[in-house]
Amino acid sequence: MSDHALPSEDEGPVTSEAAFIAAPVALCVISPDHKLCVANAQMAELIGAPAQDLVGQRVDALLPEAVALVERWIKRAIAGLPIAGHELTLPETGRTYLAAACPLHDAQGGFAGLSVALTDVTRRRMLRTGFAQRERRIGFALQNAGQWVWELDIPKGRVHRSPHWKMALGYDVDEATEEDEHEAWSIVHPDDKPMVEQRFQQVLAGRSDVFEAVYRLRDKFGLWRWILGRGRIAEWDAEGRPLRLLATSVDISRQKQIEEELAATVRQREQLERELIEANRRLTELSEMDPLTELPNRRKFDSVLTREIGRTGRHKPSLALMMIDVDGFKHYNDLYGHIEGDECLRKVAETLRHCARRTGDLITRYGGEEFAVILADTDENDAVMVATSMLRAVRDLRVAHAGSPYGIVTVSVGIAIHEAANHDTTAPPVLVASADRALYAAKQAGRNCILVARPDGGAMRVVLAPDGGMGGSPAAPGSEVRR
Image 1 (cartoon, rainbow, N blue to C red):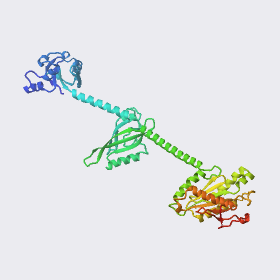
Image 2 (image 1 turned 90 degrees about the vertical axis):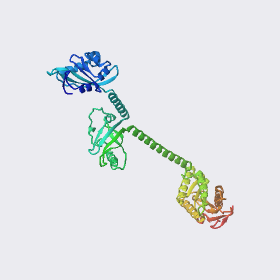
Image 3 (image 1 turned 135 degrees about the horizontal axis):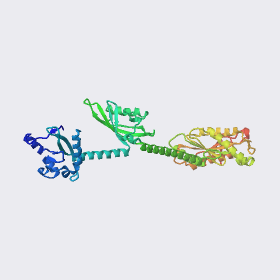
Image 4 (image 1 turned 120 degrees about the vertical axis):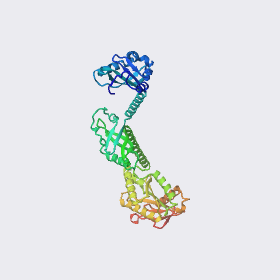
């Protein structure tokens, strides 16, 4: 307000006095001795007394809360200093007023009083207080959640962050940091920056409505924290170009740690499951393996034979089963001892293994000195060829056996063929019994030979007689032997 002279009784139009009286704010004039010279209706209503009763009354009697303020104003006015407005709250009503004053001077320029205006700002103060409280709550929530708000000026490439970003990273709000540089993405981990910039470019190009990226920021202690940033374009120019990105960021390091721990737990569990499966597989192998010869045992033989017989109904040629026995093995143990006997069985087992190497061929230790061989998808001719190679390979070992008529370790072989046409009638025990009868007949025929069982259970056919040069035998290839 500018300085004014105190009007005389005959100065000023009636309209000025009417305007003073009817003004929507409380107005009054206070003399240098702290008395009200004049007051309008709003001031009278504020004080709670008729306007005419206020004239001549001291301020300390009417508005005790304003005494100190009026004294300070008068001192400053006399000293020629500016007078600042001040908020004044009346305890009787709880309302708040903005008190403003300007000095009045007489015709000689001396200080004549104060022109005072009281404007009710109670609602504005309530709104301001509410906004302040809301801002504190939001700030408190952001701080506790490790979040902050940031705004990117896209044309300038500059970002403004709320102070909560420092608190989220362990700094004091006023603490200077190397990350105070407000260039966009300047505080992002170098390895993450290309991905963040790519996500931002997708938003600028309109390929995505939401900017979302997970990246790392370094905290006060030099540790990299994982941050999730999400935002949208908040302002465009007249041509539709994006001007401002408004976003929030939140520290998700704890979630990341939990995810990594969970992933590690899952990996550990998967590893344990693999190890358990492998252990179970190994246990199964051990339970199905003969420890002496390291060939599959009788248990494995039974399961495979049942499975393969089930297959022959759909596959030709048929299945061959061979029962093989080491000739005179009891005498061998008696002559050389059980340790040498075990070594003999290991050599025979390894030799048989090398003679049947097709996928699906199974050589097992059936029990004692007896072996069993399953040849899947094999007819009689192929089975005889395999059996012949086995018989001769064992002979070629030249393992001395003084109790044998041949002077070396030999084997006898009995063969049974399972025809696909007999799928519904031939059971594993029947086939085993048939091959076992052929083996028994081979031993009766002089050992060191191969016999094939007839499907009808009749005479056995000799397919490989004992080597005549090794002692001879009455049986000859193609002949028949009856049990």
